[in-house]
Length: 82
Image 1: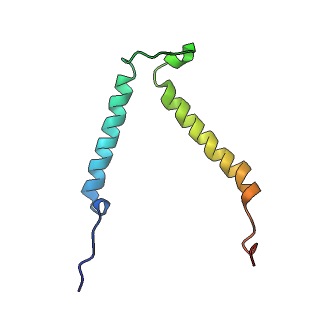
Image 2: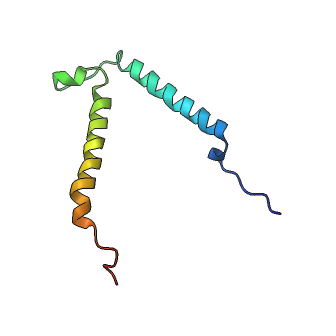
Image 3: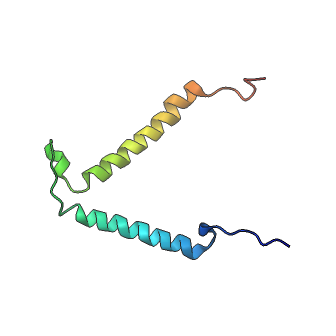
């Protein structure tokens, strides 16, 4: 019997380590955001975590537009090519 190949993320402890590294990095960047000087063009760009919130809102808007505006334009019936 051939031994089945295992991948890096098949082991739960590797996934747990990766999540710990990910969330540690997020917390570190969140804390550093209060101490890093920003070269802002507008006053609201100096707010703490402004770019994180801006990126999240932009991503949500992109997903909603693609779901409710672009999908009906591109979607075809299941038997379109038959």
